[in-house]
Image (cartoon, rainbow, N blue to C red):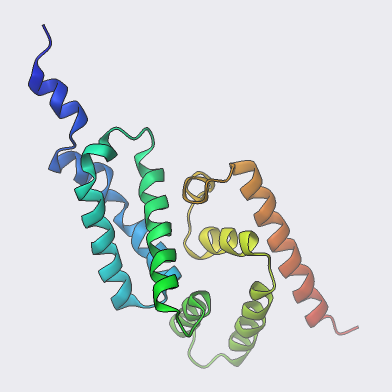
Length: 179
């Protein structure tokens, strides 16, 4: 005869299980939120809100077949909702790239010029290519994580990323061609 407690624990995530399966993803969640929102303080608050929502849904979460995918999808949707509500004045990817520039070299004018050109080129990409390129190259997510967050197939993500990189590369080559 099955033990009721073991059956119940199968459907309700414990605090330890939550820490191992959800909180262990907090670095990825934070980098994704910071890039999408563009503000470190707001990103920290957003991560806390996301984790609280996930904790409140832990019973349902424990039954999900792909918990990391669900966490990333929840994060992406939360950020998109937040951005729709706040109508930000800045492009979060632009803010992220400015942070990268300031961390790498404050006085390097060539890097700043290249950064501005790349920002303009990224804005010209179709939305899916833009999003996939940002998740892969800025957030450092792997293909399966991007697939889980966007509900796209890995093969499609590879195609989108390849096309985005080729488009940006070709335009950079044209800009820097001195012939």
